[in-house]
Image: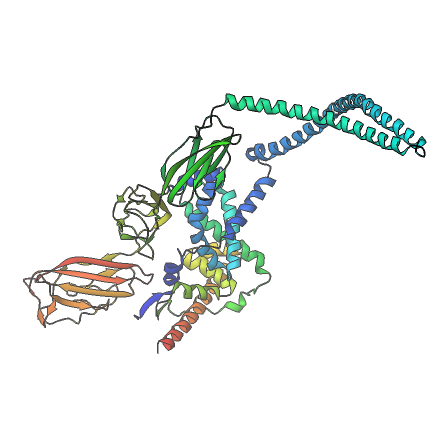
Length: 432
Length: 185
């Protein structure tokens, strides 16, 4: 761990000014409720139309309904009159019944009077009454059966006129990506009822059903059409293709800054190709791309994944926040080593020297690693201390006049990583 | 790139979808502010809720000049302050005489790295009056004069409370550092 000087204000300001953390989900609901109440209670000319017209509308409809009820009562009395008329008609039928019953009654009375004398007569009478009863029931039954026969005849006639039913249908598509909503159009002939079987225990009795196939697979859709008891079936195959599942995350977990390379990690499954849209006009077809946002702001990043069958799935990352880069790294491009003797190489913050090289930061990083290479690629200097820079010496001798390359890597306290490179020319002044 | 000005325009006519979008984008940052001014999550959520209602209902007061985020930040800070005023009577009150001593120790100090969570816990553990003044001055960048008006105190009280807050913070941070070194060993 590195010790460093901190100004207490800066410490808090840098770390907490833009600290972001999501509040719990209930907050939005509460806001929504309160806003609604406020809006509702406020007599606002713009919102007036909406709420109060609804209220007025509701009152008027209730009023209209009440009036309608009153108007409907006379109609009801009409109906009752009709009913009475009907009952009168049925009453006219009853005399026939009473006639029959009277007949029976008189015979029964006869029965009673001649009870003691003639058992045989009684028997005869009984037979007679049963006969009468039978007669009446028979006639009734006859009437019903003839009616039934008539109906049956009509049906028979219809059947003979109708041809055999033939089932047929078409689907809006026969191959689609899951979840697929498919509309079936009936093209059957000579039928009056339908039974659809969608091949996964789901059925429908509609003429033209719409069905949602949720998961991928091969489905056999069977349509059975009926005309009475005669039926006809047809089967057609529907193929539901697997849809890829797109998903991605950011490889950089910390704050994102403009002009930094921001890497995206693809977590999609079942896909063969993908298309990225970074929201800044850039797009990519790589699986795990990276993008450099040139302006600070909020971006919507989308990833569309395609399967071999051309099924696609889209994931949208909303409001990716790219911040202004608050870190500045500046480094001199030339160095004049002190030929009279190597300097210590130590510099305080905000201290500069022409004979010591080190990159300068506006905010000190928490991790720091500087390496300087010569043209042969060997390391002539390295340091992990920000206050310790290169004095231009290599193997205890002033390094030769040349161009050197430096690379500085590290991390800031908020986790933001950096890599900065540059070149450095060693200069020796004539009058030194 | 999300067009903030479009969202703001839609929010002006109370478009539900735009309001939700604005909330989604800015609630984390604004909640961060609320957390700084309160000592519990529940209080912070109350402030955030009130703040957003003010933002949505007063949006037509926003002139369109200057940063919208800044405008929202100010509203949330003001909400936090009025929240503080509401609850003040139950909390500690400082007398000016009591706080005459001001500390002249340097404001820089050697320290280990602190995580944001540690900094938060330190701020949340400050007495409420100190916390508000420290937030307003050090983080939001208000002047002592403005703070005095906002909190209805004298400019000197603001200054002395601020320096007390700072020394308290420093002590607490040093305590954390010591604890950390102990743990490392």
